[in-house]
Image (cartoon, rainbow, N blue to C red; front, side, top):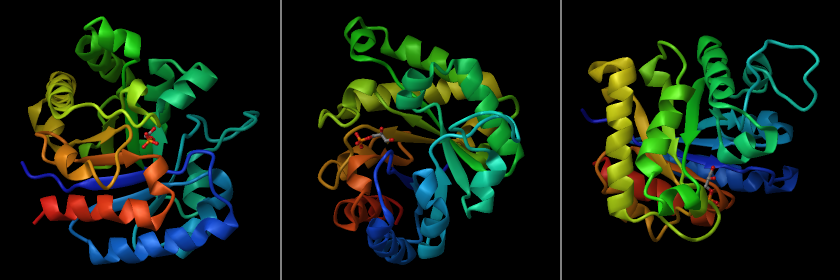
Length: 251
Ligand SMILES: O=C[C@H](O)COP(=O)(O)O
């Protein structure tokens, strides 16, 4: 089936109020490219202001806690993201898995809370270089996905992001064959876990050094339904060409 492309940016620990002009410019470009869905996942300090500055697309968080509230220093809840104008959140990013020791079960709980609270979710999976070089990438990442999936997710509000850890922020991009093999395997894993009809609706994004020069090639790969973009999402000059490449695929 034809799935709408989604191009999501992740600002990670970047961005001050002075950078909101970039969000406004990205919003204007998103409004001109309505064939694709566009989103920016912001640091918590900018969620509210970015949502106000970006009527053209969705603003989201970079992680979410499974509980509604409580003594969880440094965390953010579903209601806090929504209250700030957010519509989605990332869960399971490799930088959060590593920094916070999050298990696959933790990720599933975070995704479940976000979906039941009405947010869209981008659930990240990906292998280290060691695993890739040992030839175990597909097995590891499909297992990671199955163990990180929430029960009975709404497939229209769930996207998976395949992010090989060795490609994040390194300038090394997985080749089209590697991406195609992994995305096909992830579609299969979704089908085994959720059933074919549900799996067919879930978007699978690629993330890892995506930029305006390589986006067209990546988006041409089967089962690639968009991108999760880090560094190149920080400026309109670098992010808008990726949105336009997705839009060109969606004609
Ligand atoms: O969340 C985004 C990914 O970690 C990719 O980051 P990158 O585009 O800077 O490689």
